[in-house]
Image (cartoon, rainbow, N blue to C red; front, side):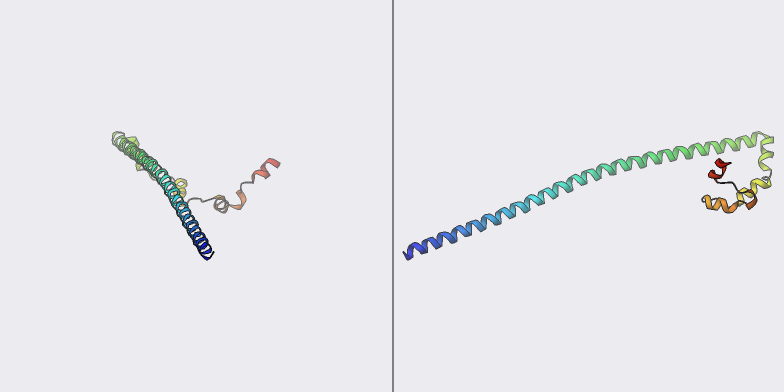
Length: 137
């Protein structure tokens, strides 16, 4: 009888040990699966970011090419203007004249940075009415 109880106790402890090992293996497999899923997600994100980077670099190259084209066109126009100045005495005389006072004053003023700056610049007697005031009249 004691042997039978001892045998049953040993079988119970063996079963408990086997169950613990199985639980530990299941947790390890779950952790490994989670790690694989995270790795795959990071790989997908890396691929997406790499594709975005390629697109950005292509767009930047396109912008640089457009900028180079614009600079070349500007240089050509400036060269044409200089050529015209040298060809045409009337144009040379016009270019040499000083700017009219009104144009010079416009160049001397700081740039307007919004509606408030515009309103401050206007004299009180010549203020532009608001849109609501105009429609009421």
